[in-house]
Amino acid sequence: MQTVVPAERMRAECNSTLGTRLCFAVNSTIDTAHVVPKEQDRHLRSSGETNMDTGEDLSCLKMEGIKVEDADSCTGLSDETRQRLSISDRPSSSCTKARGKFRPRLLATKSFPPYSQCIGGLGEDDDWDNYLDSDSPLACQSNAKEEKPVAYEADDTAKYSRDVLRAKWKSRRKEKLGGSLDVGTDGCDRWRLSEKRRVENSGIQGEHCDKDEGKHRRGKSFSLKRGGSNAEKEDGKPSPILPSAHSAAHENSSSVEDPKGQNREDDEVMEPSGHRHPILSKLLHSSTSSSCSSINLSSESDEVFSDLDDAVSKRKTFKKSRTWKTFLTMMHWSLKRQSSWVSKGGEVLKLYSELEAKCLDSLMRDPLRPFVPQYYGLVTRGEHCYIRLEDLLNGLRRPVIMDCKMGVRTFQEEELIKARTKPNLRSDMYQKMVKVDPSAPTAEEHEQKGVTKWRYLQWRDTTSSTSTLGFRIEGIMMEDGTVQRDFRKIHTLTQVTEALLYFTRSQLDTLNAYHSRLVDLKDALRSSEFFRKHEVIGSSLLFVHDHNKASVWMIDFGKTMPLPDSKEVQHSIPWVEGTREDGYLIGLTSILTALSQAISLAKGQQEDS
Ligand SMILES: O=P(O)(O)O[C@H]1[C@H](O)[C@@H](OP(=O)(O)O)[C@H](OP(=O)(O)O)[C@@H](OP(=O)(O)O)[C@H]1O
Ligand SMILES: Nc1ncnc2c1ncn2[C@@H]1O[C@H](COP(=O)(O)OP(=O)(O)O)[C@@H](O)[C@H]1O
Image 1 (cartoon, rainbow, N blue to C red):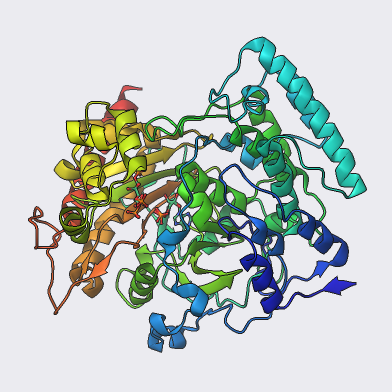
Image 2: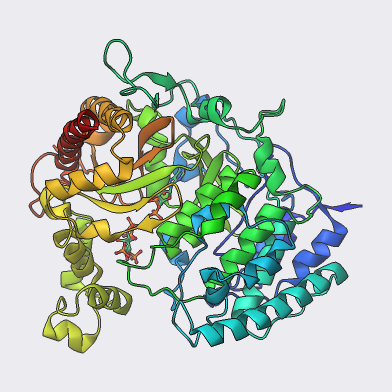
């Protein structure tokens, strides 16, 4: 017996709560409406009272995976429609909410499982007990409660906590079998259990989406030949092999596509019946355990995760879920993103912003299209609207990722005007500032315990390479899942070159591939009308590679503004207030220079060895 929940009811249930911040979507079936068995539906409801320690209510999650009978809910666009339809006409009323509204509060805890575990799982269900018996850091982390904001407890506390946790875990498994939800005594446990259930019971189903669109004009990824001196073709250029990230999946993944073109790996994550999947459930256990640990919010140190020895061997045992890889990458970057993104087979959903949707729409008709994730339109989930984007990590195995925020400034001119005319003091930004450098705020700011957003962003720009080199490395995630954000302190080109060598492990073919792709991007930027007519602020270049592919993509257009009155910007000159110049090309040139230097050094290293 199956239940289809009408959109109205779904909305009513969502609205009765504080709102949705986080939606998990793990089913790869994109064009099939998912229908939830009654039993599963009951579970979904029972988790409704659950809270995460964010103070956010996530009860809408329980509705994910239920077919929504909503004409508005999908705006998958055909090429033709895409060309004609103005974005502002499309969003349903629920899409008109500004993305910023849904940002979660900053938390006292912030931690996610080491990536290596996420992609590899932690073993079969019973391994959880074994895992807790081990001296793994996570076993300790899982017990660090909110009132103890320390990642690692003293040994004896940890042992005690492990026992407690094991007991809780066992009782929970029992509950699960019995079907009742017993809320734990701490928020941490509640979150884990409910989150797990949500995901297990979800299976959010997408709408029809014409994914073939955009496949025809994909940006190129470069195939990397390992073992040889580099990945160059006979003509000395890296060989562009892939017309699309989607086809990358065909060529390099161990997964097999079914006749519908869906990836079976993803299917394995979430069984349609809603049964627990070993990888997913492990992921969630570990996710929770660490979510309750306290890794401080300092943006300089909070994203560095340790690897676990046995994770590597266990990883081999399990198939990987690309969907989760992508989602966790986003979570790793920033807590904020945990609330703004949904990861789904082959595509990702980003919380709607009108500005970004408009940009993406224009970009689909611009020479820059091959350098931007394909945009599939909008979709409504619960009461929120999302932008549907191609998943740039699809087809990559153990991807290595670098996010470079482009431009000589990351604040919009309007922020500066606001700071002067109606200053809004942000205590969260003040705290982030103090954490990095207690002497950074002025005496007045210390007294107010707040800074304006402009002041904070500008401080970030001047303490990184943004102001001087026209870009900064926001973060790097290596293949083992370790995420590092210390690069934001980098100032010089030499330091950038070192970072690039680290990021690519001095692999010449990878460096060459990136260089070549960026040269092509520069050409496309020159001929792009979109680029000429937009002020591009806070946008990133996303570098992604694995053992045999590398590519760079333009992402994040949430602060990219069209210029008024057919004004144009050069992007290559320093910013002076009122000019709207962003210095994007200054950044691109710096990266190209650093890449060239890295290539020379890597060549030297190769010759030496
Ligand atoms: O990275 P840290 O130092 O934490 O600072 C963040 C980033 O600058 C965000 O930009 P991005 O999303 O490009 O990374 C910005 O979001 P905006 O994009 O809204 O400017 C945040 O502003 P708030 O969202 O206002 O907190 C700001 O707190
Ligand atoms: N299309 C995509 N496919 C896969 N990962 C993506 C995609 N877009 C963004 N990401 C990941 O999410 C992170 C945040 O993306 P971004 O667009 O900058 O979001 P925000 O506006 O929240 O800062 C990126 O650094 C990247 O790791």
